[in-house]
Length: 476
Picture 1: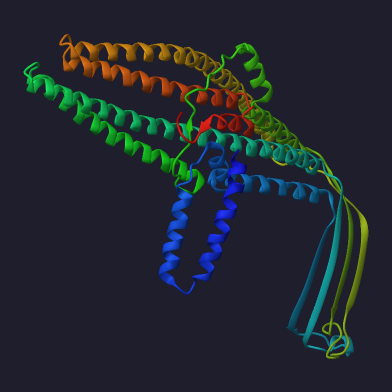
Picture 2: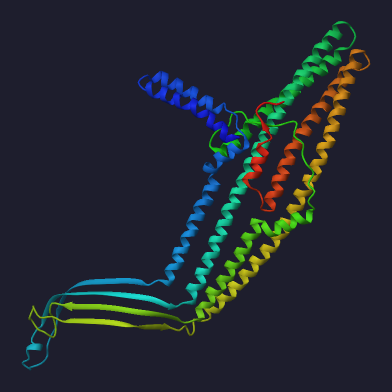
């Protein structure tokens, strides 16, 4: 639905942009046209799905989760590097200025020099290939679990965004309904005030009815001001997720009927145990803690590396070559072998780290058990709220019909002199309260349904699309 509406807007927008391009040398017209263009965009009605699409690219919390996920996937390359060879090169250059004293009478050319001023050079290349390193293997398995955990966290962040945009949307609709109801109540009170004034002029009622009606009108006006302010705040909350202040919001169709949930609650709890992303994340955290134990225990195991090393060193002179500057010393070394490192004793550090890792794993397991109980509690709570709200909707419908009949009969009694203005004000308040209750219960039903699916890890974009089908442009 939303994609079709966007498609139909394109032929209107493109010619207008072309028109702006031709008027680029006329600043005033450009500013005016741009203002009209943006005003037309903001005046377009928004629905739940279109706002969610905007939030996908703007919400900072979801963007943070995306970057975290991409950064975590980089750990895979880092883990693979633990099994690949490493190459290190070193080079050096030294200037030497040496002196010595000789206490001998032997005439020897090799010992005749007392000063040496020369340069020396060296370089070396070392290639190390791990052959056995249990720590690297355990770290790589831990990294794979970390990436799985990060993927689940990203999906959970998307579900959380669905929940937040739905909550803000329905709260905004609820605030808008409150504004409209108070406006209708003000109109009804004003009509009642006119009738009361007419009866007062005819001497049929006292001034008390008029004063009560004016007081009620002032109170409802104050309530409407607060409701308008609340509605603006709710739209700002939507803006915090989408980056754009929404104009009109499509309301919920008044003719939709909700269905009773027939699936037993134990089935929902079982689905939560199987699909809850929060529980799956905790399971991955337990696996990570288990891998951490392996990493710490690897401190007891030996490591085996293949080593290939080449070094070259030479200088331009110096002892024992006397003062001959062009002579020098050169050394060459090539090494190929296997290096074994066996840890023997580290002061108890490794054993302490293993005990620490085991205790931390037990902590994570207890956290997972606590979360498991909380998830079950939330599922049961949302399930019961959903069933209760379904029954409330039926009761509120009956209450609304009764309040409507009561208001009509009270108006008839007032016109016949059997009821006073205060009775009508009370009946009006009961009627509008009933309308408010049934509207809120409809939004609460949808939010309880979203909460239930979120708690079992089954909230998807299709759920938002299903709700979006019940949003209408104009009330019926």
